[in-house]
Image (cartoon, rainbow, N blue to C red):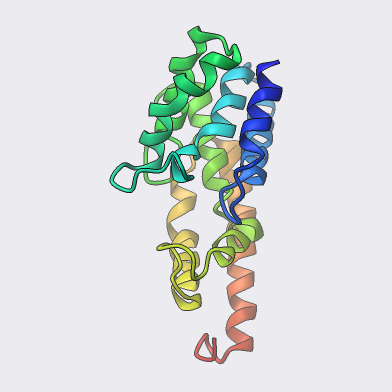
Length: 196
């Protein structure tokens, strides 16, 4: 019952890079990583975290002076409790969200590590390139096309080392190569990125 309510609540969160489809991918990839590691995880906590980890980036919840993850954590109880989410799992949901970004370190909780890896992986590969290009001109991350390409180059170098599990690192190698291939082709078609 609470899952349906949560899905209905978050379906309205539309954004080209971190909206509802991003939430779906993170949840599914988290479960895939857990399965590949043959470990049991709290699927309820992962589900709630997946669909709420970026809620603090959306209006009317957003507060510019507060990091979106911290803002998301602030909202968790008021969103989940009325839906009937098990209150004893709320601390784990908060823990997962607190370390989800690539510039953060997750806690030692297995769910938090897996979720962090899934979120990092969604910034990599063709999906990562697509997400970054989708926010050109609408986000500080990519105010223009050249800055988006610089961000992709940065992610190629930095994100693989942010992955914690062997399974995520394996996927990361594939996605890193996809990004490199994209830039190689783009470079050929734009005189070394000069004609972007």
